[in-house]
Length: 125
Image 1 (spheres, rainbow, N blue to C red):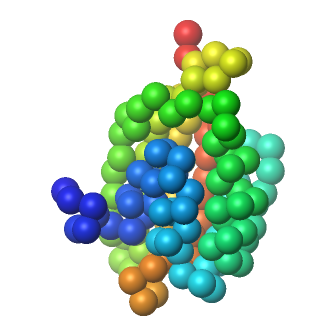
Image 2 (image 1 turned 90 degrees about the horizontal axis):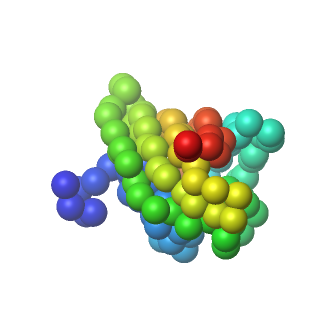
């Protein structure tokens, strides 16, 4: 599936795991309602700038090297898209697998509502 035909949530997941936060922000509506739950924190943002400057760089920090996007699933759930993705990360603490599940809604060709749940960095033996 080409980038142009890939669903918005899947495009966001790809941009995020490539650490292309600028591209991820371009997919978000100016009035985005973004909320997420990671193992240690609840996150909330009301603008693409908040998501790309305050949240995503904390989820994948400079020392986090995404080795691979291991799975990416996207499907419609009525008027929302469900996207699930798993990726492998290495950093000075070791090798980890991370999985996120997200639901998104679209307005004007952009993500205007997004909810994300994250597994956290799980150690790989």
